[in-house]
Each structure stands twice: as C-alpha cells, then as structure tokens.
Image (cartoon, rainbow over all chains, first blue to last red):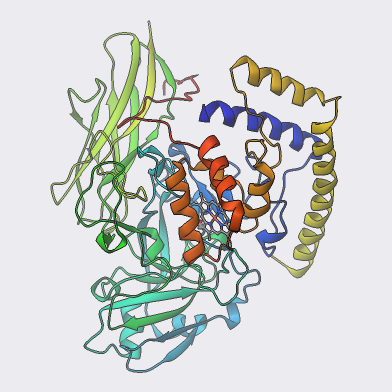
Amino acid sequence: MVRRRKFIKKSVLTSITAAIGIPIVYGRFLRGEILPIGLENSQITLPGKSAELIVLNDRPINAETPPHLLNDKLTPNDLFFVRNNGLPPSRVDAENWTLTIGGESARAEKTFSIAELKSKFKTYSLDITLECGGNGRSEFNPPAKGNQWSTGAVGCAKWTGVRLSDVLMEVGVKEDAMYIGYYGADLHVSGDKTKNTISRGVPIKKALSNDSLIAWQMNGEDLPALNGYPLRLVFGGYPASCSGKWLNKIVIRNKVHDGAKMGGQSYRVPCKTVAPGEKVKDEDMCIIEEMPVKSLITYPKTGATIKANQKMPISGKAWTAAKKINKVEYSIDFGMNWKSCSLGAAANQFAWQQFDADVSFDKPGYYEVWARATDSNGKTQPIILPGWNPKGYLNNACHRIAVKVEA
Amino acid sequence: MTDQMQSFANKLVVVQLLVLFFLSIAIHSACTDDNKRESDKQLEDKASAIGIATEIDTLTGMALDENFELVRANCITCHSAKLITQNRATREGWKGMLDWMRETQNLHDLGENEGPILDYLAKHYSPENKGRRANLEDIEWYELESE
C-alpha cells in the first residue's frame, strides 16, 4: 500500500517537473522556509549533492545514499548522506567564523578562529565512518518515529582537522569534567532564533581520545554546506548526531550534557530490552554511545540477473565501534551456510573495511545474498531485526540483495 | 560561491518559485475542475485499478479528505509533509508525536483541531504489520555484465 502510494506520487511529480522543465535548485544560501513546502521532491537537487541521493525530507533536509553508491573506499562528498535537524546557516563567513570553548568544567573560556586552529595545533587526517543512530529505522515493527531511513545514513570520509583533545587541553579541563556538549549555527525549523536545534555531545573520555576531531575538510575539500561547513566535530563509532555541524561552541560539562536532543527519547534506547511496541518511560531510556557492528553489500546493486555458469563478485563495507572487524561472511541460502569473504584492513580505527568474495550458484533460481560482519568484540550482526526500541535506533540486521540466476 | 553566482542563483530560485506558485494554483484548480488534466486522470485510473480509494494531494503528497485542510494548515509550516507521510502510527502513537513536538519543538496548541487531526493521521497513516523482517521488495531487475 505504502509502496503503491509512492508510485502514484512519483508519477504526479514527473508531470509537475515536466511542466516546469527544470529541477528545483536550492540556493546554498537560501533558507528552506521560502520553499513551496511539501512539493514532492524526488527531483529536488540538494546543493552540493548528487541527484541520486534518496531525499526522505526536504525540510529539514534528510537524504540517504543507495547501497550500491557506497562502493568507494571513501564516500564522495556529493554522495555523503545528510541528516539535518534544522536549517543550515544561510550565510557562512569562514574567515570570521569562531569556535568558543567554555563550560563549567573548562579552566577558562577561549575563542579560536579557524586560522588559529590551523596554526596553533597539529593537523590530522583520519578516515572515519559516520552513521546516523536511526539508520535502518524503516524496518522496525511496530514502526518507529522519525525519518524512515533505509540503509543509507552512513558513509566513510577522510576528515581533516585538529584533535579535539589538543584544543580542550589548551583551554584547560577541570578534574570534574564528565561530558562535552556542542552548539552549532543551524536554525530551528520553527524560525525561533532562541531555540537550539540540536546540542548533543560525548563523555569526556571519548572527547579526549586521539581520533576525535574538529574538522574543516572532508576528502580534501571544504566540508559540504549540508555536512557542516565550515567546521564540525567527528566522533567515530558514536551516533553521527554527536558529531555536531556548523560548530561554534563546545562546553566542558561537570555532568551529562543536557542540550537539545540529549534527553527524552532522542538518541536513546531502553536501558532494559523491551518487547516490540512496549511503552517506555523517559527515565528508563539510556543514551546511545557505541554503535553496533554492521555491513553493507555495495556491489552489485540489488536485482542482478546472471547466467548459471557466471561467477558473481560481491564487495561491501563493514564497520564497528570496536577495535576492528574480524570477519565478514556471506550466505546465498538464507543463512543455512556461511562462507568467508576476504577482508581488507582499516586505514585507521573507525574507517570501514572492504570485503570481497566470488559467489557461484549451482542452480537457476531466486537468491538473496546476505552479508554479516563480526567485530573484535566477538559481536555478529543478527539476520532479523535486533531489539525493538521506540525511536528505532541501532538496526544492524544483515544486509540483503536479490539475485536471479537464469539457466 | 561568488557573490555574482549567488545573486544569480537567488534570482533563479525566485523565478522558479514564481513559476511554481502559479503552477500550484493551476494544478489545484485543475484538480477541482470537471475537466481534469489528462495525466491526473490517468493516475486516478491507475489508482482505482490497483484499489486505492484515497486521492492524494499533488503538492503535499498527503491523503485528501475532509480533515486534510486542517493538517495542511497546522502541520507543514516547520517541516515538509514528507515527515508526516513517512511515518506510521496508531492514534495514540500520533498523539505521542504531537505531545513531543509541543513540549520540545514549539508546536502550537492545536486546541479543538487536535481531535480531527489525530483522526486524519490515524486513518491514513496507520501501521501495517511488517513482521520481524520483510521480503525484499521494489527490486528493479537488470542484467549483470560479467567482468
């Protein structure tokens, strides 16, 4: 039913677009509020983004990458997913952009320009996978609230910037420091300028780890406007919502940060597992820290038809918040038998690892290729949905593609 | 982007918005006209062929019925209708989302409109049982060249 409705909407849209003759272009500096709200948008081009991204919502912008477009070692900037909670700042002046570090557990309050960050601290480049906590939400049953991400709210890029720890240490971290929180320049969708859109953070230990970055570059270029230009945080292995975009302030806290979307049910799962559909009180919800082991088959695209005597190469990506991925296996018989894939090394921790295999099929028929990864903590992806939770986070069920083998 | 490009882009967008504005009026009136546009009619035929009773508003993608205008008036000022049409919930689940938006996201008090809005949402966007893992659907089959 849902699918059919979609089909109808799409056709209507095509006729609208045909009549206009040009795709709708968001100006990079144009705020969403003057857009014709709700216009069907499979034809909308997001600034700096490929038209092949699947747009879940155009206001605020939320768009995901189809799995077969995640085959690159590093996800190109125009293919990297977008999860915006609000409206990106309309005019960004990178030269006069500042980052202020403060908070009750900071020894002082200091402000840095981007040029100062670049000159005062050593620059690092790390390949880090970012995945939205709600990636895979669309599969939960009963349905979970929010953008209905399928598999594509994930990507791995080379991030260049300074270590967050170097900057925090320069300012001074008090002994009672427990957490850091960020603030960014995005605007709340209601237009209320006094309201923070999202202000999340990480425990101080994570903030001080060597691979936590304040970044201004992605894959050797300025950050895309929709991915936080000119400055953002990058924390591997944590929900991407921790990696604040359009970053202009960091607070060192003596308690768990209490900014927007830290509380309630946002980016939290039940502290104790619950039955599907069970009501969970806010106080029984715990903050998500580490993301689970996961993988995607990025070649071939689902729907491949091959001949019976044809071998089919598969490749994909696997990632985890643990030290590394130890093993990736595939199955072509719905999980009865699993075979090993060859597995590449990660460029550094939190970079995804490539896997490959040559698959052959004995008989003609309909097949599904499933892939599952196991990480260095010994955790393996489930083949059905993992624990249900009200907001539909942490779905790491194995990825499946459909294949037809013809005689 | 240079200033020039930016002002060009802004102009372009303004022109497009104007075009869209008139177009949307045109489409809306076309929908209420007796002489429906050919493509709309074809779509409706398709819709009835596959057993869909509900008409869809072409601009928002939302189901059309007596309470549609209320939802349109109250629900798509902050975000697009896409956030609504993506979601599925029971009446109680929808109420939970409205309460959350009121408490944390500046949603205004809906007053006596809340009931009809919830009726609308629960009627058109109610959950279906998807099981613990659904079949792979919407597959576009293609021939994979051997390498």
